Image (cartoon, rainbow, N blue to C red; front, side, top):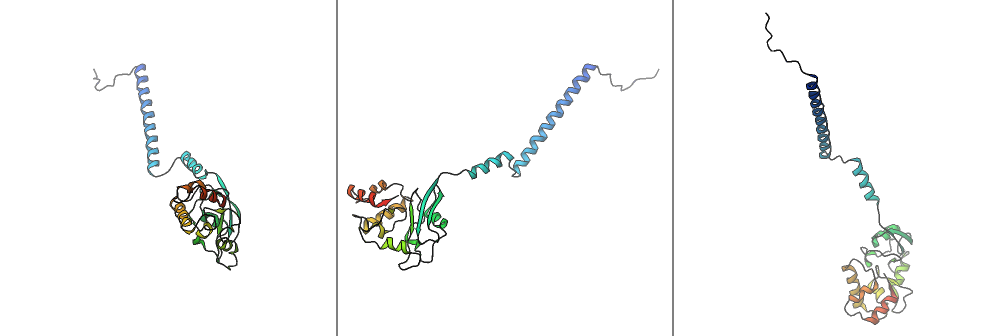
Length: 209
């Protein structure tokens, strides 16, 4: 009689179903592991997901408000310009085409923050072809100011034209402005020693933020 050695026992239908379910589960787990491993490799390589790139673009394009300023004096294209909130005096001058050869830009604070409605006057050398406005503003005698002076760009000579403000107080105002990165309100000047209520009234009449 022949011998049956090493024969695999016949599997029942229920056992086959169990083994088949286990095989499918292992395949699903393996596929998920491969997918997560691929995403980790992409992140390590510096490739950002599409959603992140889109949100980053929106963040860059989102801006603040706007302000309107009047740029005059020794600039190439004097006029009224719109600038983003937080812009500086140097940005306004650049928007106006830059300074002319007769300009004296060091006479104003180029780093001062602009305020809405402010006038930026770039002084010019006396007798210069494009510096008439700036030179005239600087040469006015006390009491002869033709209108409010821009606090953001005022020089010592311009502040000295305001009644009750001498050269010393004018220099204190400029130092206060530079230390605080600009002045948003005339009322802030009452923090300067030597400026009393009467002087504050004169400043409100002769200055604009």
